[in-house]
Length: 155
Image 1 (tube, helix red, strand yellow):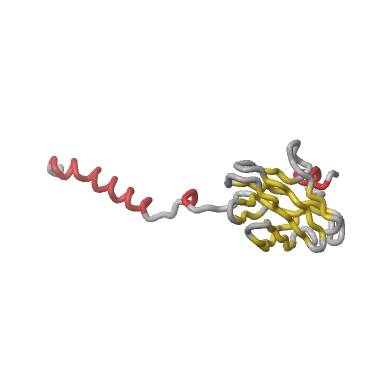
Image 2: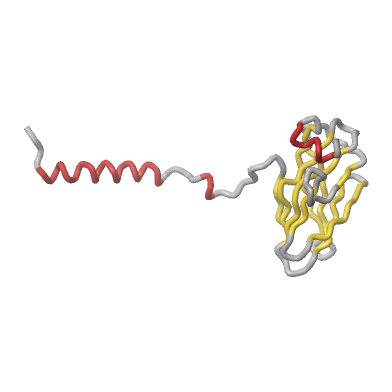
């Protein structure tokens, strides 16, 4: 026995609506901001910090910072990065960016005489500007023996 023509027409519509309802309740990951990298992100006034991390071979050894500083403002911004007693000042141009790490041909080297944390740990970094005060972030420390990061410390 066959169903009525109306049932045969409505069945695909009901199935399609049921399946559409399933996907409507699932969260979409690309709608949520996240850092798809090894480093951390931070927003600091007009300055955005992207993929900030430290690289060293061992706790107490020399290392370097790697990442990017992006300025969305209309004026150049001097940014000071402080790790322990070591400070480096970088001027980020208006509507521009500065790449940090010798692994980049356009990057600015940010050496650290000693890194107090071992690879796999977190390191405290203070980011400051003359007009916006300071922001403390904890960045991951990565192993310089990883080929991806060897160039960051000039190895």
